[in-house]
Image 1 (cartoon, rainbow, N blue to C red):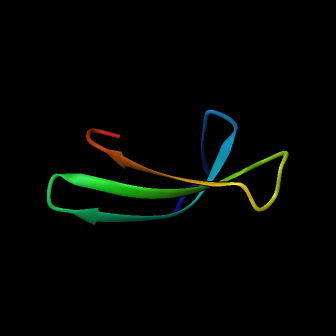
Image 2 (image 1 turned 135 degrees about the vertical axis):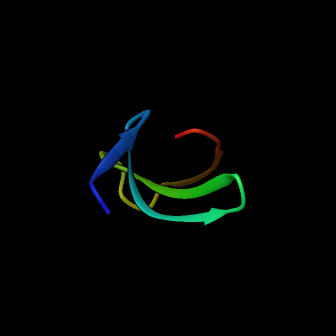
Length: 42
């Protein structure tokens, strides 16, 4: 997986489920702070 970022988070994992992608991101300046997003069309 290519390195991707969003809103200060490094996307560390992604999975495609149907038309959607679910991603896990870890904050680049505050390790241990995580988010998940449900994405469509990247």
